[in-house]
Image (tube, rainbow, N blue to C red; front, side, top):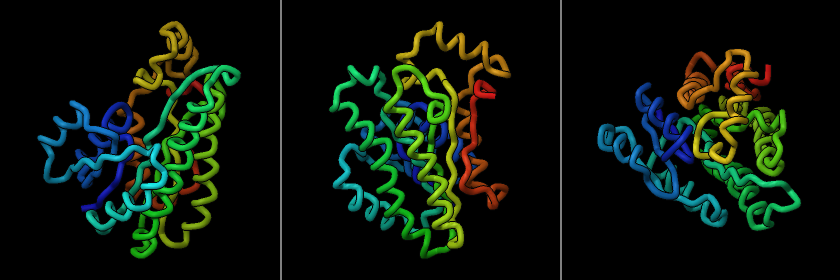
Amino acid sequence: MKTVVVTGGTRGIGLEIVTRLVGDGYRVVAVGRRPSAGLDALLAAHADVLSFAAYDFDDLAGIHDFATRLAREHPGLYGLVNNAALGHAGLLPTLHERDIGALLRVNVEAPILLTKYLLRPMLIRGEGRIINISSVVAETGYKGLAVYGATKAALTGFTRSLAREVGKAGITVNAVAPGYLATDMTSGIADGQLDSIRRRSALGRLPEGSDVAAAVTYLLGEGARNVTGTTLTVDAGSTA
């Protein structure tokens, strides 16, 4: 049974991904600052294949030790889904420097460092999958999300170059870019704006977390063995 680490796996898209992977026969380690009611229910039903690891990715200094512990407790690690992220919104001139720093640490530095250390067991085994959860904002932009968009664009650039670095070692690196979903992270977007995005999309609807989870499952599967260095957009055609 293949083991996959999912960061930010306690709620929203992350919990959807964890749920889908458990159902698809993976052993999953959900990482988050604290458990959630949704994750607790899933843990109760799947304690044999699902575990929780507590970590706050604002603490960059501890990532090495955390990753080392994960690799030791879960030998033969197959996949890493970098989903944990902050979504602070605000116009740049008024966005506090503290929030800018947190966005850069959690959304960019933390996944790069975690990937650095969890790649090592994959390189030894000659097999692995890295999936970074980006956003359509990385390409389209959105008012009030300049720094958030910059962090997600950084992830897509990281994805492309890392795919070149580790491809010959049997490791694929891809990104998934969700469109606007009704989640905690988009709660700051007015309902009228979400309705406008829904109407403009090619399919006339918003994607759901389960759609993103399905994309992650595809990239982890054998059918995507020759897919690397790319970004899979899941947005119901809003950027078509």
